[in-house]
Image (tube, rainbow, N blue to C red):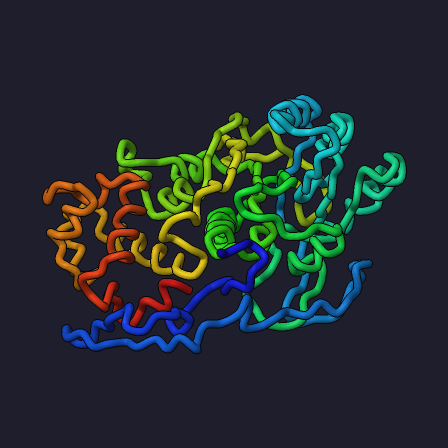
Length: 393
């Protein structure tokens, strides 16, 4: 039985799939077999990044990453901090561990500590470290301060890592945390604000990490509580009732997590730390968009069926292919996904022949994937063309 601590590929390519003949390759209209030898199954990573410095997180030389201050939003309002703490408290037990991403001036950090939580402050800007360490020295071991960027944990790039970039293994080993069985949850909450310039890419990375059970999800079902732009929040929670926003990201997010919008705040409620080293109010368009505080709780039963960390890339590919022709009828699009009879598939998922891709709810897509993946009628389950590996990457 699979458990989070098992050696599972963080991202699979076609050569990593273990069963031969699951794929046919579309090449000049004709299909040929693509055999996938079982011995090509890989371990957790093809490459294990090495961090030169020890857990003191001192600076080490590397060409992989050169830290530059990027504009970030920070919680500087005591009112907002108290609101967030109240929403995070929920059924939280006293002394629960919270990872706070980029706490900056520490307004939310203080509020969390006052509520009785234990906090690990992962700060990526060195200018805030001294003040956070001063706070740490006054709270009797309930605060740990680490020079680390949570949103850049476990980069896909090869080479030596330089703080604030590091691996989740190093972080959790330093914190003394071990992997927990997926269904038992994880005694950890993460709270933060998604990076402004890489918000969408960060959401995709989180989903890849979740479905592959890599990075923080290698240790269990960590709950993420994040401020995201209202635009991305609406996309993440969209369904066929909001077709203009509905996309593969919506399906993947809702299949993987329980998504709850805790509150909505105007962007003007936050301060921005600029490359000039000053905290300042946001202006112009930045102040016009609201930010939503969302809670992403991975489902306990995510991997209890056909979907596993070994075949999630196929599910990703299927969704991306479907939404490229979002207004097409599913029966017309199925022949480009699988050699299995389209009418038979529709009967299995109990859908009418006129159903469009945009009319499919997240659970319908999951049922479609499971039907094709579990079919016993054909040795070859899926079709792909030569760009599939690029799509999966």
